[in-house]
Amino acid sequence: MATEFIGLIATREVSEIHPPRGPQVDPDFIGRIARAHEDAGFDRVLIGYASTAPDGGLTVAHAAREVTRLHFLLAHRPGVIAPTLAARQLATLDQLTGGRLAVHIIAGGDDREQRRDGDYLDHAARYDRADEYIGILRRAWTEGGAFGHAGTHYRFEDYNPAVKPVQKPHLPVYFGGASDAAIAVAARHADVYALWGETKAQVADTIARVRAAAARQGRHIRFSLSLRPILAATEAAAWERAERIRATTRRLREAAGLPVAGHAPANVGSQRLLAAAGAGDRLDTRLWTGVAALTGAQGNSTALVGTAAQVAEALAEYRELGVDIFLIRGFDPLADAIDYGRELIPLTRHLIAERERLSKAG
View 1: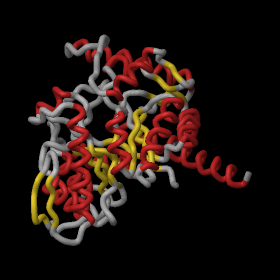
View 2 (view 1 turned 30 degrees about the vertical axis):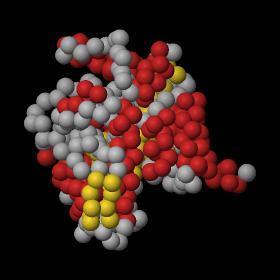
View 3 (view 1 turned 90 degrees about the vertical axis):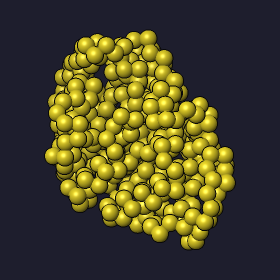
């Protein structure tokens, strides 16, 4: 299986070290960052979801006009719209992008964030709903005639969408979450299980759990891993850059009145990352948890620190555990995407291919 790289694009440049500025939706920036990822050799880019963020589907539609090869991964949250409408919207977007769309279903891990969109279900109910929701999407994309559904969360009849995805049998479905409920849903529905950047031992354990759950369903799942590479010409310079990123993140959070300690995240994934951060900010030689500790491990917040060759070596080690998709994004979103294309992506692909060649020859 070929190694794939996913980046991230947003409607303006913002990160832990870049306060938001300028218009909330900057069409020129969307085009520039999409083209930068395509030129850098990324296979796909993620467009995230937040209750206050611009619409991701429209962002994909705009970005797709700026590039010809780059594929897209759209984060999508059940509970906001009906799955019947979502199936048509996503299939239409797949048609408009020429079959370049995948969907990352996010059940939701933060009650306050969910309620901003009017969703008051608890954690267990959200995963139960996601299970039902994805099943409906898959049926809408693959069945040839009308069908009905009567479940816990959704009920409809005589549904027969005229639009189907370009991709067969359906759009690739990504799913994540570290809880037992999340793994159960992934085992039934996911084509790709998404992990956050944890230690190699933690990643190996999660992959084993997901594979076992998928095998009981007679399914095979691929794995993606999300990390924030911090690169420099020397290892010492890379660690110095990491410390500058930590200092800037702390300063900006304190200025905004945001906490830098004492976090109590509701979702299991963030809890696991914070527990790892508590064991030290440097794990597995170059896995760095400095920003995760400050932010409460909000999303993809752990980094690999070193030269491009050293980080490529670390990624190749994760590949040997079963990861074949890497979601990498920088703290300097546009500049880092360009930089990854110069050395990190080609070095990693070459190293993994060479290791696999030697393994087959041996």
